[in-house]
Image (cartoon, rainbow, N blue to C red; front, side):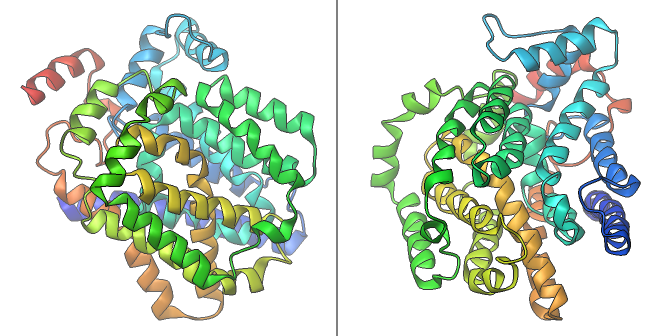
Length: 395
């Protein structure tokens, strides 16, 4: 059964890699990179499909399904785009799977729309997306990862110093998840000299800072001090208002995901590889991809920030999730670098490291009746029975 559950995610990655490969071949043949071809659309729509028809994949996913099914919105909500989506799906009597598919499409579209100008990055992106924690995080923190994906798309306006389009993007993101307002300050990078953030080739410095963040993050005294500031994170609105009871029960109850086991080892090695091979990536892609320095820098912020706060409370991770998609992009680029330079041992070793997290996550949740890790279809489940099942499982 474990092998079957893993193969489902392998199949998803295989299908999306196939569409990416065909889209890349098309762009190479025609030279067209700004206009999506039909295979790129299939890449996006396939991801939307599997997000739409899933059941309880991601701790908060059933809560979002109930929102779409019942037309439920939060009282005094300021997230008007999200409310409009929920009320539109409900008001048009559409099945909740349509709403869930739209959320998945927004996530994958805005994360990869800008990256698709460099189609080779997409060739291995599905391997990282499903092998590491990204897919499950997107399925859990649905609204925030929609907002984070829009932030990824808005990076172009930072580099091109286009303030109004950037503000509009972040404003739209904040209407999906209020915490996106934090990203307004990121426009400061439009006025920071590029060489100040072009640190991917400073291996010793970046590795040292990362290790310090890791060590501090597992130090009880530091955890206690940081915990005193939990009210600041709560006021940023980084907690999803649906499903957080489930999240607190499953994720925060035992802190098992964030204890340093195979999953955390996988996250650590994924981050370490992008840092350690930073000089090679910079040498190869800095002149080819104008966004490389900022992508790598934001990926580095996520790596350091995650291990700095992950052992305090789950909500401390949420602000750093806005930088998580950049690790997805850089990890995909690193896989492409290994592949192009015929570094087969490094390539397959990195693939193994990436997939360790998903494999272990599935294995340790196999006996959990309300687990939200394995892929399941909505066809075999009923929203009305979910509350009873959950109550029985936690009693």
